[in-house]
Length: 227
Length: 248
Length: 43
Image (cartoon, rainbow over all chains, first blue to last red; front, side, top):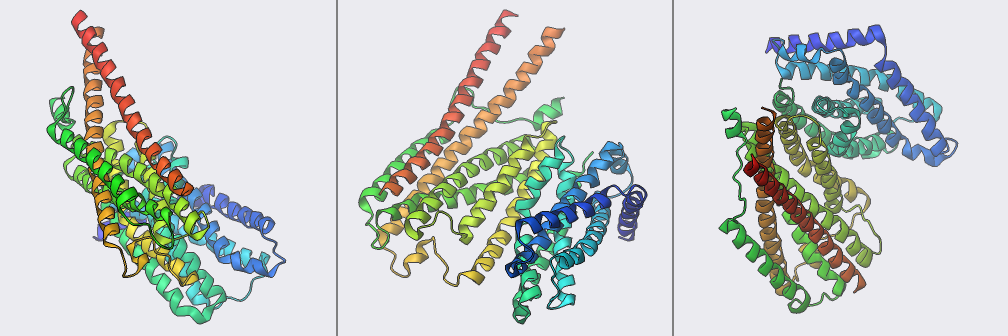
């Protein structure tokens, strides 16, 4: 068991370190999230008060779309560098490779959120967060679920030549419960804090989804990453 | 090579039809004819919705059979992952195909019914929305199957996704129902519960007969599709053999 | 009434479309089998 975590941390460290050296993916993700915000400011007039209602949705659109960019890279880059085979034949469990990749992707999406969400609030002049703690919690839970199933499906899609196109098709329908739950919970926390029990219930749903799919992916990833 | 052939073995009905297939064909045809009679002539016309309510029978029957088809996909995916026999993969593939056809029927009859009774083409009603997401999930399932590479890889990946997708369905349904109930306190019912306690007995019988008939049709199509897939696989093997002989 | 007719015709269109595609697949396969049989006889 300690080997599992050791290997996973090793993989995560490797991915993050190579990301730190090249700064390809993270930079792209952050710039992309800025562009999404820009596009949204054209689509919904930031000067109008009604725009505040779409902010929870925009947050999750940013996370989902920039997350897809990072997920696409996480296994493709291994294949481009011909290191996928090496990873598979190394004395590591597929589940620890998966967990390591998950940790790396999760760290990256958290960094993207750390930059883009304050930026969004700033640009849309939004400064009435009901409860910062709960807001962070819902971001954490939602991103974890999205990234855990996303990393798994990225490993699956990496077997295809057109995996960049395949991944969104696989990922969006499967993660729809997270997206519904996260947007609803964020909406309540940001603008309707009196209804906090509802938000907590949504977070419980996301939490349950996270646990179910994380465990399921750990079990099934062995069959996705066969040599 | 021999072991591989053993693994890929699929029972083939070349020119002869299995008796089960024949029985299912007759059953499905008879069942559908009977259900037609029951739907259009025997069952009473619903008071508030009128004739349009008769869409309900085929709509619900297709939906429940589609759900069973996807459950079968799940079962055979699991079996394939454990046993790695090609026959299980073939069953899962054909079942998903029929499930997709049935879901398409649900998704076209649903809006027509919605238009006539709620005067809107689409309502984000939990069951209908879940069906839509289900449709997308199994479309993605076929995208995996269209990947390039050997069948074993495609079958393995599709089986994994088939299991993930099916486990996702109840969660999707639950979350959508919850989401919708926050906005529309009045839940539209698409099922028999809509008529409250007063479901006409004849309506119920008609519904059950229709469901049974569609199930038989599903069974027939499943066997037929599997036989066709089996034919295709054997044919490819033979082609390969002839090709080898011609090269020599 | 029109809705009912439209709905049922779509249902049967989809169903027959699917069955037709199966049938087409079958005839194609049978043709190939015939072709292969001829080839096997020739050699």
